[in-house]
Image 1 (tube, one colour):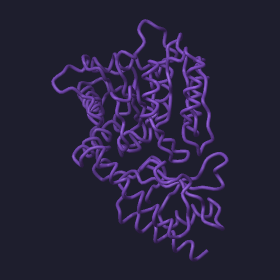
Image 2 (tube, one colour; image 1 turned 135 degrees about the vertical axis):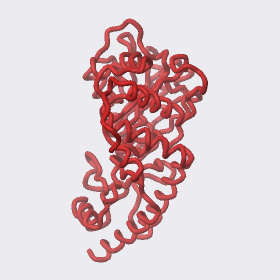
Image 3 (spheres, rainbow, N blue to C red; image 1 turned 180 degrees about the vertical axis):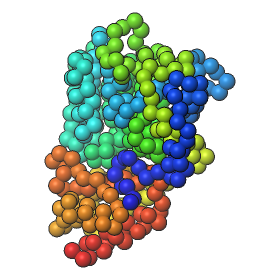
Length: 365
């Protein structure tokens, strides 16, 4: 089955076999070494590691959690916005709105800049809102909003936030490992992500990459299980506050090594782009139009209008019968679009066959 949903992804044999490594107690030195290795590997994805510098002296830290990408998002928001801070959440899809839900649940002082789901960020409205709310200390934004496939422009946000000394918290759940994330130049304070999307690991482990000085000092955490300060402190010492998912850690370290050997995030970006273009051009030849204009979407996922005469359920089920899993739209887009992601161990031949299958389905309808 070829998974064209935005995670979990098809695994390589190499990563799948890593799940069969020996059972391991999370309090043993072997687990400590595994955890430390993954933390270093994650920093190296975007060149944040410092070879030869002690981990606790590096400006950046990767903090590992057992949980989905939403766990990392919630840990980032609840841990890094102080009680005297004020958060601005940018919404232009389901996952931006989820950031607001997290802030509300944890009783964080926040406001939103909301957009239609298919809209790009309104920079003029953002500047106006910030000028009217000079007490904003943090801004939270989704990098790749998989609701529509839009890749939000962090470079524009960075300039605006740096002028105002606002800390940027990024949901990079479905962009980390395949899209550019310039942590230093864009002034990113923290980025939440997960193993089972662009990194080609399995569900169950997520992480936050953060600037160490962003962690609060001498404050009461809002949450027990998701407090990044506790995790970072214990992981720096080689420990973990709670039981981690050992087998998913095995898979993640293998997936990261596989990615490094293949050439890193830039090669993965190029591969995704090649597959996405193949799909976009193939569907266009059948009159299937993309939701967003060329250049607005990520290379990770694109959204398309359903073919004439097809409900999502009918289109999905006929593709599933041919071993392809697509993804539905959400909310008011549920009846009009479908989504195609090309993450994971997917080849050009897989996607060429996908186009052939779609043509056959439409021809036989």
